[in-house]
Image (cartoon, rainbow, N blue to C red; front, side, top):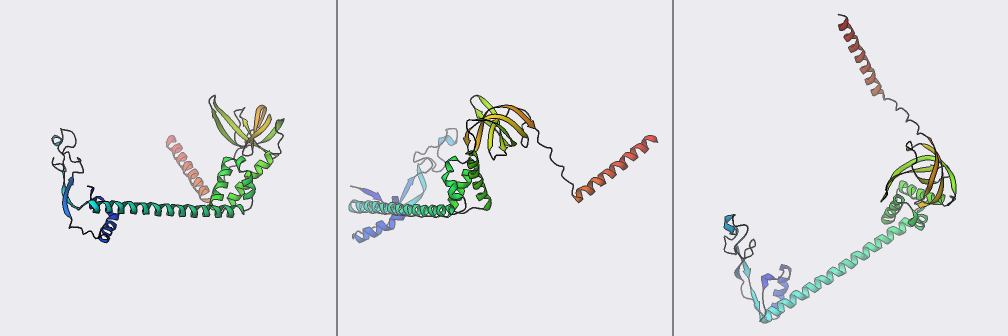
Length: 290
């Protein structure tokens, strides 16, 4: 004979079980009490090493039973079968409700994404950028993805996207495969890592609007330096071309940064320090004469 304790069923289904039993004309007796197994030792009465309290569980004192009683109401036969069927039906209804809610949430999210995409595409230059998104550099592509996801953009974001598209257009005019003289300013540098070691690269922006990545062939190739070098142009990534086998570096070092003028407060402080230094020097000279 099947049997189940009403208080073993999930609490949210107990009222449904009572209602189902009442509708079937089954009268429930008053709940009794039961002592459950100790939650710490699982009913064995033993817990932990023997050197600690001789291995006896602290919670139940070795009895294996919990210190408190809980309600108990055993259902048998028809009442048990009806209770199990009620729980199964309630769980199925919960799963269906969860599925419907998840589908509704997914549909709402999809509609939101679609609306954001439509709004973003209408922004200046975004549609053109989408057409070449697979060739944009990582930074420009990240900005484009952010705009498409949100559906709006700041002026700075639109300028970045336009810069990426313009870079691709400029790179398309380069004589790929030809060995040319590259003249321009170093605007960036990075380290390319491989199994053969690290290679320092510099990015040169030319007057033609190209950006060319070249292997640094001189120690004074720093950002801001004006350079001239012969290299073979190859297609690159994100609008930056690759300059292969660069030869004959000519470098004009980057100009020293212009001095920053002092503020009025800084000028006053410098003058006071100079006066204090002059006074200290005069005192030292006078002390030396004495």
